[in-house]
Structures are given as structure tokens and as C-alpha cells.
Image 1: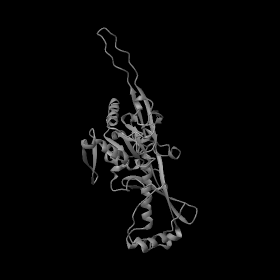
Image 2: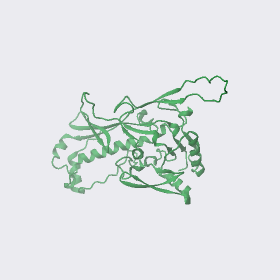
Image 3: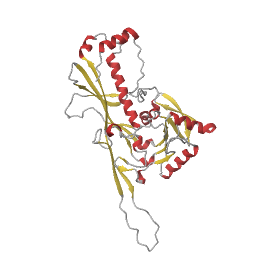
Image 4: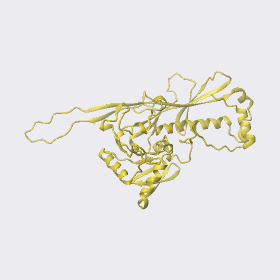
Length: 358
């Protein structure tokens, strides 16, 4: 674990560069981080898209502000079939309603920061960058927060199997024709999204008829997307397909206005985290945001709970917890964490075109 030498960092920044610090954060694979706070336009993040649609929540569903699960819900999939009958016929036999039980656990994300105690004490009064009120420790803390929510954003485009299935169950967890989601097998027709495979390898470019076919398939599932998500690669390919028929729309996203184009009246948004080679850049997702929930577990202890050293806080309105750690040496450590989960209430309301040429 790397221990920051605070005095060296602060003094070097102040004497050599002044008060301006530019964020250009990358991960261990040299990919730029994507997520809340990393761009002025969070409409290109899944977190931002769900927030714009009012689908980001604090607390577990149907359990106050906490709960064992991020979401636990019954799925009614059969009530029997009605039929015609004659005046002298007996009433048709009753059929019992059939339910399945779905549930999703909370998932954990966190990041550690550590400072040498002697360096911090020696830097007292000199930990401000370029004379401005920017603490080197505070600056790194904010960077760690951005990294935390970038990790969450990256997991939102994955299938939840990463890091030994400790990742959030992202969109790829329910946009599939086989396997389980929330404890129910997606081979069940009532739980199955519409998927159009252009494969087996991503060599066949998306065509206009593919988009039309997907909307027809979703219509057969009584589904209608209100947004289409894709990588910037597929965004430009669809844009070229529409050509002279393209129709743009300007929508307000918090304090900014963003422009997208429409397919059958549905706006298309490029999602930054889908752009990397391992981030579904060969897929186009048809999303009903009403059936999606991004949930965060509140960190503040309830009244009467035994307290801990953790300090509840929030970042951009989303709950986090900061707790001291003991590195076992003469340094101070913090662990910053968030508990979250993405919930798809009904995968059959979603669709995906996969294995598109990139």
C-alpha cells in the first residue's frame, strides 16, 4: 500500500506549479475513468441517465431506508387463460396464480488512502497548493471519491461476475438469454429480454432493419424502451444509418442542455463506459428506465444503533462512509466506501443488439 508523503507532495505542487491542478485520472490499464464528477456532461453515464429519469434511490426498496436486500420482489407470471363458453357450459376451472421470487444483494465498493503521520505534521501550514486553499490531502480525497464512483460506473456496464462476483450486477447481468438474474433463470420467457445477435463475431455492422426488428421483438414482449444506450462507436454508426432522415432533439440535463437523435421517437445516448474493448462497445441496449433502479444504502446509523468510527457523508447526493484504518505503522489511513446495486425489475422490458461490428 502506498503511503503519501504529504509535505513533499504539497511543497512540490506549490513551488513548481501553483494552485492549478488538472485531473486526468486513469486506471491500472491506462483507461480514463468514467463516472460522476469526472465530466461536465454526466448524461453520458449510466448513473447520470438514471438520475435524469428519477431512478436513483437511497435505501432498499420496501424496507424503509435499509434492508437485507437492495431489492426483493415477487414476479407474477401466470394467472391462467380466459376462454369463451356457452350459456349451458360450466364455468372454466380456476387456475392458481404463479409467482417467482427475485432478490438482489447489496454490493460493496471502496478505496483506501494513507498518509505518513510525520510528513503530515511537518507539512502543517504548508499543505496548501500555491497559496490557494487547496489541501493536498483534500485534493487526493476528492480524487479517491471520483475513482470510487468510476468503479461503480464501470461495473454498471458489466455482468457482475468480476472480482469473484463481488461486482455490482450491471446491465449485462440481465441482457442475456441464458443464466440467472436475481435468482430467476433468464430462459424463462417471462424473464427473457429481446436479444438480436449479429455474431458470432463482431463483424456485421448494425443495419436499420436490425433496429426495427428489435423494436418489433420488444413490442411482442409488451415492452417499449424510452432510451437507447450504446458506445460512441455504435452511436456514430447509427447516426450514419439515419442520414437525411435523422431527427435531433435537445433535452435539459440538470443545468445543461444535451442533444441526441431519435429512433422511432426514442433518444439515443452514447455511454462513456461502454467505449472500451471490454465495455460492450459492440452492443446497443434498448432500455426502459422505469424498470431500472440504482440503489445506494445509507451509511448514517439509525437512532439507537451502536455507533462506530465510520463517518457517514455523501458525494453529489449519494451516500458514502469514511472510516479510519490502522495500517500498523506510523501513518493515518482512511477507507472510503459505498454500498450499491443496480436492479432490473423485469428483464423482458429490455433489449440488446449484440456482436455489432466496431
